Image 1 (cartoon, one colour):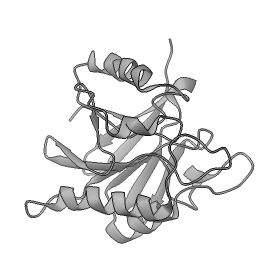
Image 2 (cartoon, rainbow, N blue to C red):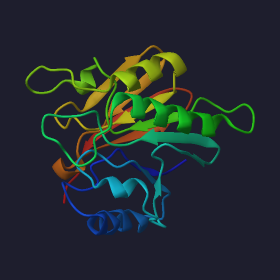
Image 3 (cartoon, rainbow, N blue to C red):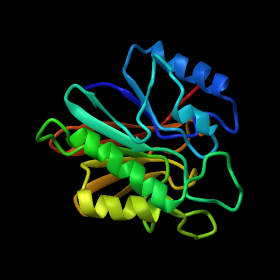
Length: 197
């Protein structure tokens, strides 16, 4: 299965129109595109119709039978960024998306796309040594064990970690030419790449 996934911060404090232009560039690949908005995106991005890209904030989409669900934004930050949510709302959105993936009987373990990483992992550690991920995402991953968790938010914390059986990947920020290629087979294989303009 080939698809492109954006883990948030489609823009850097940009507009919905800017996000539409950037997401439209990915549509030229002719791959399915899934995304969640980040805390540096306008909150309206969670509800805009993109046509060529599907927002999975609080909802579920299946691509070739694999369920993906997500939550955008981040817990409150000291910077008062545009799209911040309380932990209770993050928890609600996680369960809403997961429940939608679980409808229609049994389904394979879904993939979670969360802008905010789970708290207390290698992927939520800031350069100052502080863990700033979401405690709701952490609890959810521990309880539901999604096969894969894709996240962003902490630009300096790209890499790989695990919580129980769940593999967690922060590909790093595209604006710093970083991305990851993930093979979601029997074993999850991840390659981190530096893009060249």
